[in-house]
Length: 508
Ligand code: NAP
Image 1 (cartoon, rainbow, N blue to C red):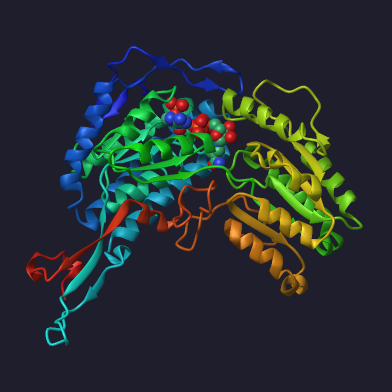
Image 2: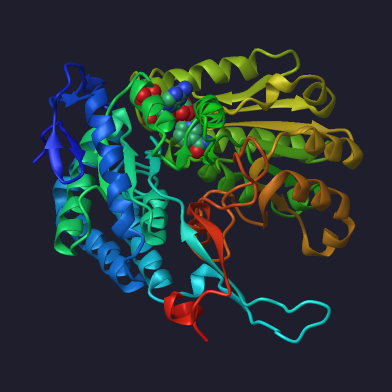
Protein backbone atom coordinates (compact mmCIF):
# COMPACT_ATOMS: atom_id res chain seq x y z
CA UNK A 1 0.00 0.00 0.00
CA UNK A 2 1.24 3.48 -0.88
CA UNK A 3 1.88 5.80 2.08
CA UNK A 4 3.33 8.88 0.38
CA UNK A 5 6.32 8.76 2.75
CA UNK A 6 10.08 8.57 2.28
CA UNK A 7 12.18 5.57 3.23
CA UNK A 8 14.96 6.85 5.46
CA UNK A 9 16.84 3.60 5.64
CA UNK A 10 14.28 1.00 6.71
CA UNK A 11 11.96 3.57 8.33
CA UNK A 12 8.99 5.23 6.63
CA UNK A 13 9.11 8.94 7.35
CA UNK A 14 6.98 11.93 6.36
CA UNK A 15 8.06 14.84 8.51
CA UNK A 16 7.83 17.54 5.86
CA UNK A 17 5.11 20.10 5.19
CA UNK A 18 5.26 20.23 1.38
CA UNK A 19 3.93 17.49 -0.80
CA UNK A 20 3.24 16.74 -4.45
CA UNK A 21 0.95 14.43 -6.37
CA UNK A 22 1.69 12.42 -9.48
CA UNK A 23 -0.49 12.83 -12.59
CA UNK A 24 -2.55 10.40 -14.60
CA UNK A 25 -1.39 11.74 -17.99
CA UNK A 26 -4.15 9.98 -19.93
CA UNK A 27 -6.92 11.72 -17.99
CA UNK A 28 -4.77 14.77 -17.20
CA UNK A 29 -5.78 14.68 -13.53
CA UNK A 30 -3.77 14.38 -10.31
CA UNK A 31 -3.60 11.00 -8.59
CA UNK A 32 -4.88 10.85 -4.98
CA UNK A 33 -1.74 10.19 -2.88
CA UNK A 34 0.17 13.19 -1.53
CA UNK A 35 3.91 12.46 -1.43
CA UNK A 36 5.68 14.14 1.46
CA UNK A 37 8.81 15.92 0.32
CA UNK A 38 11.88 15.17 2.40
CA UNK A 39 13.09 17.71 4.96
CA UNK A 40 16.71 18.68 5.49
CA UNK A 41 16.77 16.49 8.62
CA UNK A 42 15.42 13.48 6.73
CA UNK A 43 17.96 13.98 3.91
CA UNK A 44 20.82 14.25 6.43
CA UNK A 45 19.61 11.16 8.30
CA UNK A 46 19.44 9.11 5.08
CA UNK A 47 22.99 10.09 4.10
CA UNK A 48 24.35 9.57 7.62
CA UNK A 49 22.78 6.10 7.71
CA UNK A 50 24.25 5.32 4.27
CA UNK A 51 27.72 6.38 5.41
CA UNK A 52 27.47 4.12 8.49
CA UNK A 53 26.02 1.24 6.43
CA UNK A 54 28.93 1.58 3.99
CA UNK A 55 31.39 0.47 6.66
CA UNK A 56 29.77 -2.98 6.81
CA UNK A 57 28.21 -3.20 3.34
CA UNK A 58 31.58 -2.75 1.61
CA UNK A 59 32.87 -5.79 3.50
CA UNK A 60 30.01 -8.10 2.46
CA UNK A 61 30.99 -10.97 0.19
CA UNK A 62 29.96 -11.05 -3.47
CA UNK A 63 27.59 -13.93 -2.61
CA UNK A 64 25.89 -11.83 0.09
CA UNK A 65 25.35 -8.92 -2.29
CA UNK A 66 24.15 -11.35 -4.98
CA UNK A 67 21.58 -12.72 -2.52
CA UNK A 68 20.46 -9.16 -1.76
CA UNK A 69 20.06 -8.29 -5.48
CA UNK A 70 18.20 -11.51 -6.22
CA UNK A 71 15.93 -10.88 -3.22
CA UNK A 72 15.15 -7.39 -4.59
CA UNK A 73 14.18 -8.99 -7.91
CA UNK A 74 11.95 -11.50 -6.09
CA UNK A 75 10.27 -8.80 -4.00
CA UNK A 76 9.62 -6.66 -7.10
CA UNK A 77 7.92 -9.62 -8.77
CA UNK A 78 5.93 -10.23 -5.57
CA UNK A 79 4.36 -6.77 -5.94
CA UNK A 80 2.49 -8.34 -8.87
CA UNK A 81 -0.32 -6.33 -10.39
CA UNK A 82 -0.19 -3.48 -7.88
CA UNK A 83 3.13 -2.39 -9.38
CA UNK A 84 1.97 -2.79 -12.97
CA UNK A 85 -1.20 -0.77 -12.37
CA UNK A 86 0.69 1.99 -10.56
CA UNK A 87 3.29 2.14 -13.38
CA UNK A 88 0.54 2.55 -16.01
CA UNK A 89 -1.43 5.06 -13.93
CA UNK A 90 1.56 7.35 -13.39
CA UNK A 91 3.22 7.06 -16.81
CA UNK A 92 0.39 6.61 -19.31
CA UNK A 93 2.43 3.73 -20.77
CA UNK A 94 0.61 0.52 -21.75
CA UNK A 95 0.55 -2.62 -19.60
CA UNK A 96 2.77 -4.53 -22.04
CA UNK A 97 5.49 -1.94 -21.59
CA UNK A 98 5.12 -2.10 -17.79
CA UNK A 99 5.53 -5.89 -17.79
CA UNK A 100 8.46 -5.67 -20.23
CA UNK A 101 10.21 -3.01 -18.19
CA UNK A 102 9.72 -4.97 -14.98
CA UNK A 103 11.29 -7.98 -16.74
CA UNK A 104 14.25 -5.87 -17.76
CA UNK A 105 14.66 -4.52 -14.22
CA UNK A 106 14.61 -8.00 -12.73
CA UNK A 107 17.06 -9.21 -15.41
CA UNK A 108 19.46 -6.35 -14.61
CA UNK A 109 19.36 -7.15 -10.89
CA UNK A 110 19.99 -10.83 -11.50
CA UNK A 111 22.76 -10.09 -14.04
CA UNK A 112 24.64 -7.94 -11.53
CA UNK A 113 24.06 -10.63 -8.88
CA UNK A 114 25.73 -13.16 -11.15
CA UNK A 115 28.55 -10.74 -12.01
CA UNK A 116 29.58 -10.21 -8.38
CA UNK A 117 29.13 -13.80 -7.28
CA UNK A 118 32.84 -14.17 -8.10
CA UNK A 119 35.61 -11.58 -7.89
CA UNK A 120 36.60 -11.32 -11.57
CA UNK A 121 34.66 -8.08 -12.06
CA UNK A 122 37.21 -6.29 -9.87
CA UNK A 123 39.92 -6.73 -12.56
CA UNK A 124 42.48 -7.70 -9.94
CA UNK A 125 46.15 -7.50 -10.93
CA UNK A 126 48.92 -9.28 -9.02
CA UNK A 127 52.53 -8.15 -9.62
CA UNK A 128 54.74 -10.31 -7.45
CA UNK A 129 57.91 -9.05 -5.80
CA UNK A 130 61.31 -9.53 -7.40
CA UNK A 131 63.59 -9.13 -4.35
CA UNK A 132 66.82 -9.53 -6.35
CA UNK A 133 65.90 -7.07 -9.12
CA UNK A 134 68.77 -4.68 -9.89
CA UNK A 135 69.42 -1.90 -9.16
CA UNK A 136 66.46 -1.99 -6.72
CA UNK A 137 64.20 -4.80 -5.50
CA UNK A 138 60.67 -4.79 -6.96
CA UNK A 139 57.96 -4.72 -4.27
CA UNK A 140 54.89 -6.99 -4.27
CA UNK A 141 51.95 -4.91 -5.59
CA UNK A 142 48.36 -6.12 -5.88
CA UNK A 143 45.56 -4.04 -7.33
CA UNK A 144 41.81 -4.39 -6.91
CA UNK A 145 38.68 -2.21 -7.16
CA UNK A 146 36.89 -0.90 -4.09
CA UNK A 147 33.50 0.86 -3.77
CA UNK A 148 33.39 4.68 -3.57
CA UNK A 149 30.79 5.11 -0.80
CA UNK A 150 27.17 6.36 -0.73
CA UNK A 151 25.78 6.96 -4.23
CA UNK A 152 22.81 9.22 -5.08
CA UNK A 153 20.69 7.94 -7.99
CA UNK A 154 18.24 10.23 -9.78
CA UNK A 155 15.29 8.21 -11.08
CA UNK A 156 14.61 8.82 -14.79
CA UNK A 157 11.14 9.88 -15.85
CA UNK A 158 11.14 7.84 -19.06
CA UNK A 159 11.88 4.44 -17.45
CA UNK A 160 9.91 4.32 -14.18
CA UNK A 161 11.37 0.88 -13.44
CA UNK A 162 14.47 0.05 -15.50
CA UNK A 163 16.28 3.40 -14.98
CA UNK A 164 14.70 4.36 -11.69
CA UNK A 165 14.46 3.16 -8.07
CA UNK A 166 15.89 -0.36 -8.63
CA UNK A 167 17.14 0.33 -12.17
CA UNK A 168 20.57 -0.13 -13.68
CA UNK A 169 22.28 2.62 -11.62
CA UNK A 170 20.96 1.26 -8.31
CA UNK A 171 21.63 -2.39 -9.22
CA UNK A 172 25.21 -1.70 -10.32
CA UNK A 173 25.99 0.53 -7.32
CA UNK A 174 24.62 -1.99 -4.79
CA UNK A 175 26.47 -4.79 -6.60
CA UNK A 176 29.74 -2.90 -6.17
CA UNK A 177 29.20 -2.41 -2.41
CA UNK A 178 27.94 1.20 -2.44
CA UNK A 179 24.80 2.13 -0.44
CA UNK A 180 22.23 3.99 -2.57
CA UNK A 181 19.98 6.96 -1.87
CA UNK A 182 17.40 7.36 -4.64
CA UNK A 183 15.97 10.77 -5.48
CA UNK A 184 12.61 9.50 -6.66
CA UNK A 185 11.14 11.11 -9.78
CA UNK A 186 8.27 13.36 -8.70
CA UNK A 187 6.09 12.14 -11.57
CA UNK A 188 6.23 8.46 -10.59
CA UNK A 189 6.64 8.61 -6.83
CA UNK A 190 4.04 5.86 -6.28
CA UNK A 191 5.91 3.40 -8.51
CA UNK A 192 9.08 4.52 -6.75
CA UNK A 193 7.67 3.89 -3.27
CA UNK A 194 6.45 0.40 -4.21
CA UNK A 195 9.85 -0.56 -5.59
CA UNK A 196 11.57 1.00 -2.57
CA UNK A 197 9.41 -1.15 -0.29
CA UNK A 198 10.64 -4.22 -2.21
CA UNK A 199 14.27 -3.16 -1.76
CA UNK A 200 13.80 -2.55 1.98
CA UNK A 201 12.11 -5.96 2.43
CA UNK A 202 14.99 -7.60 0.55
CA UNK A 203 17.57 -5.73 2.66
CA UNK A 204 15.93 -6.86 5.90
CA UNK A 205 15.50 -10.44 4.65
CA UNK A 206 19.16 -10.78 3.64
CA UNK A 207 20.60 -9.04 6.71
CA UNK A 208 21.88 -5.90 4.99
CA UNK A 209 22.69 -2.90 7.23
CA UNK A 210 20.01 -0.27 7.82
CA UNK A 211 20.79 2.65 5.45
CA UNK A 212 22.03 0.50 2.57
CA UNK A 213 19.09 2.01 0.71
CA UNK A 214 16.87 5.09 1.12
CA UNK A 215 14.19 6.54 -1.15
CA UNK A 216 13.57 10.26 -0.99
CA UNK A 217 10.94 12.32 -2.76
CA UNK A 218 10.86 15.97 -3.64
CA UNK A 219 10.51 18.35 -6.53
CA UNK A 220 11.69 21.81 -7.37
CA UNK A 221 15.34 20.73 -7.17
CA UNK A 222 15.81 21.39 -3.41
CA UNK A 223 16.12 17.72 -2.46
CA UNK A 224 18.39 16.80 -5.40
CA UNK A 225 20.66 19.78 -4.73
CA UNK A 226 20.96 18.96 -1.00
CA UNK A 227 21.83 15.34 -1.77
CA UNK A 228 24.54 16.17 -4.32
CA UNK A 229 26.08 18.79 -2.00
CA UNK A 230 26.14 16.47 1.03
CA UNK A 231 29.80 15.81 1.98
CA UNK A 232 29.14 12.12 2.74
CA UNK A 233 27.81 11.44 -0.78
CA UNK A 234 30.60 10.10 -2.99
CA UNK A 235 29.08 9.73 -6.49
CA UNK A 236 25.93 10.49 -8.49
CA UNK A 237 24.03 8.62 -11.22
CA UNK A 238 21.59 10.60 -13.36
CA UNK A 239 19.40 10.10 -16.45
CA UNK A 240 17.42 13.06 -17.75
CA UNK A 241 17.79 16.45 -19.40
CA UNK A 242 21.07 18.08 -20.43
CA UNK A 243 20.28 21.12 -18.28
CA UNK A 244 19.57 18.92 -15.21
CA UNK A 245 22.61 16.69 -15.66
CA UNK A 246 24.90 19.64 -16.30
CA UNK A 247 23.59 21.54 -13.26
CA UNK A 248 24.26 18.55 -11.01
CA UNK A 249 27.69 18.01 -12.59
CA UNK A 250 28.61 21.65 -11.90
CA UNK A 251 27.28 21.38 -8.34
CA UNK A 252 29.41 18.28 -7.71
CA UNK A 253 32.50 19.94 -9.17
CA UNK A 254 32.06 22.99 -6.92
CA UNK A 255 31.99 20.95 -3.70
CA UNK A 256 35.00 21.19 -1.42
CA UNK A 257 35.51 17.52 -2.32
CA UNK A 258 34.39 17.20 -5.96
CA UNK A 259 32.70 13.89 -6.77
CA UNK A 260 31.95 12.09 -10.06
CA UNK A 261 28.53 12.58 -11.68
CA UNK A 262 27.66 9.94 -14.26
CA UNK A 263 24.95 11.73 -16.20
CA UNK A 264 23.27 10.24 -19.25
CA UNK A 265 21.59 13.15 -20.95
CA UNK A 266 20.51 14.24 -24.43
CA UNK A 267 21.02 12.58 -27.79
CA UNK A 268 19.49 12.94 -31.24
CA UNK A 269 21.06 9.73 -32.55
CA UNK A 270 21.99 10.41 -36.19
CA UNK A 271 20.92 7.80 -38.75
CA UNK A 272 22.71 7.83 -42.12
CA UNK A 273 20.68 6.37 -44.98
CA UNK A 274 22.56 6.03 -48.25
CA UNK A 275 20.89 6.68 -51.63
CA UNK A 276 21.59 3.04 -52.54
CA UNK A 277 19.73 1.81 -49.46
CA UNK A 278 16.80 4.07 -50.33
CA UNK A 279 16.83 2.77 -53.93
CA UNK A 280 16.87 -0.84 -52.72
CA UNK A 281 14.34 -0.77 -49.83
CA UNK A 282 12.75 2.62 -49.38
CA UNK A 283 9.40 1.35 -48.15
CA UNK A 284 10.84 -1.14 -45.66
CA UNK A 285 13.10 1.54 -44.15
CA UNK A 286 10.22 4.02 -43.95
CA UNK A 287 8.02 1.48 -42.11
CA UNK A 288 10.77 0.43 -39.71
CA UNK A 289 11.72 4.01 -38.91
CA UNK A 290 8.12 5.20 -38.48
CA UNK A 291 7.91 2.50 -35.79
CA UNK A 292 11.23 3.45 -34.17
CA UNK A 293 10.49 7.21 -34.13
CA UNK A 294 7.11 6.69 -32.43
CA UNK A 295 8.13 3.79 -30.13
CA UNK A 296 7.30 4.68 -26.50
CA UNK A 297 5.94 8.00 -27.87
CA UNK A 298 9.52 8.80 -28.88
CA UNK A 299 10.52 9.09 -25.21
CA UNK A 300 13.75 7.13 -25.49
CA UNK A 301 17.23 8.55 -25.22
CA UNK A 302 18.07 6.49 -28.33
CA UNK A 303 15.16 7.85 -30.39
CA UNK A 304 16.27 8.51 -34.01
CA UNK A 305 15.83 12.31 -34.03
CA UNK A 306 18.10 13.05 -36.98
CA UNK A 307 18.09 11.31 -40.35
CA UNK A 308 20.97 12.15 -42.69
CA UNK A 309 20.98 11.45 -46.39
CA UNK A 310 22.21 12.81 -49.71
CA UNK A 311 19.98 14.41 -52.34
CA UNK A 312 19.28 11.80 -54.99
CA UNK A 313 16.49 10.20 -56.94
CA UNK A 314 13.98 8.61 -54.59
CA UNK A 315 14.90 10.66 -51.52
CA UNK A 316 11.90 13.03 -51.73
CA UNK A 317 9.50 10.08 -52.10
CA UNK A 318 11.18 8.30 -49.19
CA UNK A 319 10.82 11.33 -46.89
CA UNK A 320 7.14 11.76 -47.87
CA UNK A 321 6.51 8.06 -47.25
CA UNK A 322 8.31 8.15 -43.88
CA UNK A 323 6.19 11.15 -42.84
CA UNK A 324 2.94 9.52 -43.98
CA UNK A 325 3.74 6.26 -42.16
CA UNK A 326 4.82 8.08 -38.98
CA UNK A 327 1.71 10.24 -38.83
CA UNK A 328 -0.51 7.22 -39.54
CA UNK A 329 0.52 5.58 -36.25
CA UNK A 330 -2.03 6.31 -33.51
CA UNK A 331 -0.87 9.14 -31.23
CA UNK A 332 0.16 8.00 -27.75
CA UNK A 333 0.17 9.60 -24.33
CA UNK A 334 3.36 11.25 -23.06
CA UNK A 335 4.76 10.54 -19.60
CA UNK A 336 3.60 13.69 -17.86
CA UNK A 337 2.50 17.24 -18.66
CA UNK A 338 5.96 18.80 -18.43
CA UNK A 339 7.40 16.24 -20.88
CA UNK A 340 4.58 17.26 -23.24
CA UNK A 341 5.29 20.97 -22.77
CA UNK A 342 9.03 20.32 -23.28
CA UNK A 343 8.17 18.47 -26.50
CA UNK A 344 6.09 21.38 -27.81
CA UNK A 345 8.71 23.94 -26.81
CA UNK A 346 11.61 22.13 -28.48
CA UNK A 347 9.58 21.17 -31.53
CA UNK A 348 8.81 24.87 -32.02
CA UNK A 349 12.49 25.73 -31.70
CA UNK A 350 13.49 23.33 -34.49
CA UNK A 351 10.56 23.93 -36.84
CA UNK A 352 10.85 27.69 -36.34
CA UNK A 353 14.31 27.78 -37.90
CA UNK A 354 14.78 29.18 -41.40
CA UNK A 355 14.99 26.35 -43.93
CA UNK A 356 13.06 23.73 -41.90
CA UNK A 357 9.86 22.48 -43.54
CA UNK A 358 7.22 20.25 -41.99
CA UNK A 359 6.79 17.17 -44.22
CA UNK A 360 4.12 15.51 -42.11
CA UNK A 361 2.50 16.37 -38.79
CA UNK A 362 -0.51 14.86 -37.09
CA UNK A 363 -3.08 17.63 -37.34
CA UNK A 364 -6.16 15.99 -35.81
CA UNK A 365 -7.08 17.20 -32.34
CA UNK A 366 -5.72 15.02 -29.56
CA UNK A 367 -5.98 14.89 -25.75
CA UNK A 368 -3.71 17.29 -23.83
CA UNK A 369 -0.82 14.96 -22.99
CA UNK A 370 -0.79 13.10 -26.30
CA UNK A 371 1.96 13.91 -28.80
CA UNK A 372 1.45 14.82 -32.46
CA UNK A 373 4.17 12.89 -34.31
CA UNK A 374 6.00 14.68 -37.06
CA UNK A 375 8.74 14.54 -39.69
CA UNK A 376 10.57 17.64 -40.87
CA UNK A 377 13.24 18.29 -43.46
CA UNK A 378 16.05 20.72 -44.15
CA UNK A 379 19.16 21.01 -46.30
CA UNK A 380 22.71 20.19 -45.24
CA UNK A 381 23.74 23.82 -45.76
CA UNK A 382 20.94 25.17 -43.54
CA UNK A 383 21.69 22.58 -40.85
CA UNK A 384 25.39 23.45 -40.87
CA UNK A 385 24.57 27.14 -40.49
CA UNK A 386 22.27 26.75 -37.49
CA UNK A 387 23.09 24.78 -34.31
CA UNK A 388 19.53 25.33 -33.00
CA UNK A 389 18.51 22.51 -35.35
CA UNK A 390 20.52 20.15 -33.10
CA UNK A 391 17.99 20.61 -30.29
CA UNK A 392 16.73 17.30 -28.85
CA UNK A 393 12.96 17.08 -29.30
CA UNK A 394 12.06 14.40 -26.75
CA UNK A 395 9.10 12.70 -28.41
CA UNK A 396 7.92 11.27 -31.77
CA UNK A 397 9.89 13.70 -33.93
CA UNK A 398 12.65 13.45 -36.51
CA UNK A 399 14.46 15.95 -38.73
CA UNK A 400 15.69 14.74 -42.14
CA UNK A 401 18.81 16.54 -43.39
CA UNK A 402 19.42 16.28 -47.12
CA UNK A 403 23.04 17.07 -47.97
CA UNK A 404 24.19 17.91 -51.45
CA UNK A 405 26.96 15.28 -51.39
CA UNK A 406 28.83 12.90 -49.09
CA UNK A 407 31.37 15.55 -48.13
CA UNK A 408 28.61 17.80 -46.81
CA UNK A 409 27.01 14.85 -44.98
CA UNK A 410 30.33 14.19 -43.22
CA UNK A 411 30.53 17.89 -42.30
CA UNK A 412 27.03 17.59 -40.81
CA UNK A 413 28.15 14.64 -38.64
CA UNK A 414 31.29 16.51 -37.58
CA UNK A 415 29.15 19.48 -36.52
CA UNK A 416 27.15 17.37 -34.05
CA UNK A 417 27.65 17.20 -30.30
CA UNK A 418 28.36 13.82 -28.69
CA UNK A 419 25.65 11.19 -29.19
CA UNK A 420 24.70 7.84 -27.67
CA UNK A 421 24.29 6.11 -31.03
CA UNK A 422 24.93 6.43 -34.75
CA UNK A 423 23.29 4.21 -37.36
CA UNK A 424 24.16 3.42 -40.97
CA UNK A 425 21.58 2.01 -43.35
CA UNK A 426 23.46 0.93 -46.47
CA UNK A 427 24.00 -1.94 -48.83
CA UNK A 428 26.78 -4.22 -47.62
CA UNK A 429 28.63 -3.80 -50.90
CA UNK A 430 29.04 -0.04 -50.30
CA UNK A 431 30.45 -0.27 -46.78
CA UNK A 432 34.10 -0.18 -47.86
CA UNK A 433 33.43 3.17 -49.56
CA UNK A 434 31.82 4.68 -46.47
CA UNK A 435 34.98 4.98 -44.39
CA UNK A 436 34.67 8.77 -44.11
CA UNK A 437 31.12 8.51 -42.72
CA UNK A 438 32.01 5.65 -40.37
CA UNK A 439 35.06 7.50 -39.02
CA UNK A 440 33.05 10.68 -38.50
CA UNK A 441 30.33 8.76 -36.64
CA UNK A 442 32.82 6.87 -34.48
CA UNK A 443 34.21 10.22 -33.38
CA UNK A 444 30.79 11.41 -32.16
CA UNK A 445 28.96 8.36 -30.76
CA UNK A 446 29.23 5.52 -28.21
CA UNK A 447 27.57 2.77 -30.27
CA UNK A 448 27.33 2.30 -34.04
CA UNK A 449 24.56 0.22 -35.63
CA UNK A 450 24.44 -1.30 -39.11
CA UNK A 451 21.10 -1.76 -40.86
CA UNK A 452 19.01 -1.57 -37.69
CA UNK A 453 17.38 0.93 -35.37
CA UNK A 454 19.00 2.65 -32.37
CA UNK A 455 16.00 2.09 -30.08
CA UNK A 456 16.31 -1.03 -27.90
CA UNK A 457 19.37 -1.22 -25.64
CA UNK A 458 20.49 -4.74 -24.68
CA UNK A 459 21.70 -5.31 -21.12
CA UNK A 460 24.91 -7.18 -21.82
CA UNK A 461 28.63 -7.05 -21.16
CA UNK A 462 29.44 -5.65 -24.61
CA UNK A 463 26.96 -2.77 -24.47
CA UNK A 464 28.10 0.86 -24.52
CA UNK A 465 25.28 3.18 -23.53
CA UNK A 466 27.28 6.36 -23.33
CA UNK A 467 29.18 8.67 -25.61
CA UNK A 468 30.97 12.01 -25.81
CA UNK A 469 29.39 15.00 -24.00
CA UNK A 470 26.50 15.84 -23.82
CA UNK A 471 25.26 12.29 -24.43
CA UNK A 472 27.12 11.52 -21.21
CA UNK A 473 29.19 13.44 -18.71
CA UNK A 474 32.00 10.85 -18.97
CA UNK A 475 32.40 8.98 -22.25
CA UNK A 476 34.70 6.37 -20.68
CA UNK A 477 31.79 4.58 -19.04
CA UNK A 478 28.51 2.89 -19.94
CA UNK A 479 25.20 3.39 -18.09
CA UNK A 480 23.72 0.09 -19.34
CA UNK A 481 25.19 -3.40 -19.18
CA UNK A 482 27.56 -5.05 -16.77
CA UNK A 483 30.31 -2.46 -17.39
CA UNK A 484 28.12 0.07 -15.52
CA UNK A 485 29.54 -1.25 -12.22
CA UNK A 486 32.92 0.36 -13.01
CA UNK A 487 31.44 3.81 -12.35
CA UNK A 488 31.13 3.13 -8.63
CA UNK A 489 34.59 1.78 -7.80
CA UNK A 490 38.11 3.09 -7.63
CA UNK A 491 41.41 1.27 -8.11
CA UNK A 492 43.25 0.41 -4.90
CA UNK A 493 46.69 -1.17 -4.51
CA UNK A 494 48.29 -3.12 -1.67
CA UNK A 495 52.08 -2.94 -1.53
CA UNK A 496 54.09 -5.61 0.33
CA UNK A 497 50.90 -6.28 2.31
CA UNK A 498 50.90 -9.32 4.64
CA UNK A 499 49.29 -12.16 2.67
CA UNK A 500 46.93 -13.14 5.47
CA UNK A 501 45.48 -9.62 5.50
CA UNK A 502 44.85 -9.45 1.74
CA UNK A 503 41.33 -10.00 0.32
CA UNK A 504 41.01 -13.68 -0.69
CA UNK A 505 41.02 -12.87 -4.41
CA UNK A 506 44.40 -11.14 -4.08
CA UNK A 507 46.10 -13.99 -2.21
CA UNK A 508 48.46 -16.21 -4.22
P1 NAP B 1 14.96 16.46 -15.60
O1 NAP B 1 14.24 17.76 -15.64
O2 NAP B 1 16.37 16.48 -16.03
O3 NAP B 1 14.84 15.93 -14.08
C1 NAP B 1 15.33 14.67 -13.69
C2 NAP B 1 15.66 14.68 -12.22
O4 NAP B 1 16.75 15.56 -11.99
C3 NAP B 1 14.53 15.16 -11.32
O5 NAP B 1 14.55 14.39 -10.14
C4 NAP B 1 14.89 16.59 -11.00
O6 NAP B 1 14.48 16.98 -9.71
C5 NAP B 1 16.42 16.54 -11.00
N1 NAP B 1 16.99 17.82 -11.43
C6 NAP B 1 16.90 18.37 -12.66
N2 NAP B 1 17.56 19.54 -12.68
C7 NAP B 1 18.05 19.73 -11.43
C8 NAP B 1 18.82 20.75 -10.83
N3 NAP B 1 19.19 21.83 -11.52
N4 NAP B 1 19.15 20.62 -9.53
C9 NAP B 1 18.76 19.55 -8.82
N5 NAP B 1 18.02 18.54 -9.34
C10 NAP B 1 17.67 18.63 -10.62
O7 NAP B 1 14.25 15.38 -16.46
P2 NAP B 1 12.71 14.95 -16.59
O8 NAP B 1 11.87 15.60 -15.58
O9 NAP B 1 12.75 13.50 -16.58
O10 NAP B 1 12.30 15.42 -18.05
C11 NAP B 1 12.55 16.72 -18.55
C12 NAP B 1 13.19 16.61 -19.93
O11 NAP B 1 14.43 15.90 -19.85
C13 NAP B 1 12.39 15.84 -20.98
O12 NAP B 1 11.40 16.59 -21.57
C14 NAP B 1 13.48 15.43 -21.94
O13 NAP B 1 13.76 16.45 -22.85
C15 NAP B 1 14.69 15.20 -21.07
N6 NAP B 1 14.93 13.77 -20.80
C16 NAP B 1 15.89 13.15 -21.51
C17 NAP B 1 16.14 11.82 -21.28
C18 NAP B 1 17.22 11.11 -22.04
O14 NAP B 1 17.36 9.92 -21.83
N7 NAP B 1 17.93 11.76 -22.90
C19 NAP B 1 15.43 11.10 -20.33
C20 NAP B 1 14.46 11.76 -19.60
C21 NAP B 1 14.23 13.11 -19.84
P3 NAP B 1 13.17 17.86 -9.42
O15 NAP B 1 12.00 16.98 -9.69
O16 NAP B 1 13.31 18.23 -7.99
O17 NAP B 1 13.23 19.04 -10.35
